[in-house]
Length: 191
Image 1 (cartoon, one colour):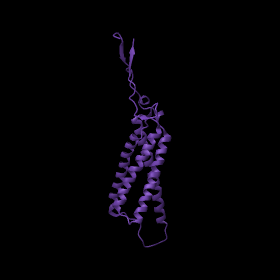
Image 2 (cartoon, helix red, strand yellow):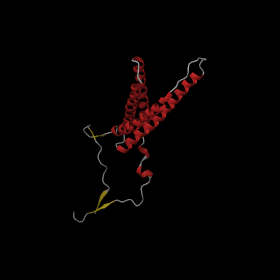
Image 3 (cartoon, rainbow, N blue to C red):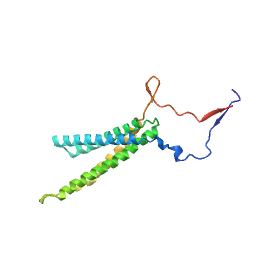
Image 4 (cartoon, one colour):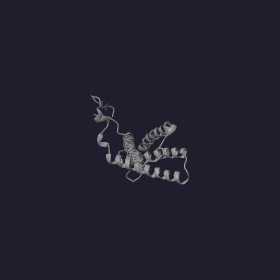
């Protein structure tokens, strides 16, 4: 009709944090499940890498490459699971579920590695007296530190893409999966 007027709803105040990010959309169960998937995949891949390294006389290059593959695959899978289980069809929130899983799984991995390293160090310090020297990294400390840093950055990238790929799809009436639709417009008709 010619005399219909369309008005755009404009908020009178700026949106606060509560309006921009609804904390009720965070699924901590999904994040914890994604973290457990990540830790389980890390354990699986790292134990397989140790087996192959011991069985075939491993090399440091192969071990470093396997560590990077393990970091990428395990964090991608964990973030994908967290985003899929979150049941939120917003890409940004799915990515945030993946990144939160990355943070929690990285801290858990560091705690597990720290406890393991402390236990090995304590066992080495309390051993019976021998003339053998202890574990020495030598000049490779920078190389190992760089590989570990690279694995953490690679796992962050994998978590971002895993969270984006794991976004749940909407179910149509026929049961077929489809991509989420754009949110409705803020326009309204006034007579």
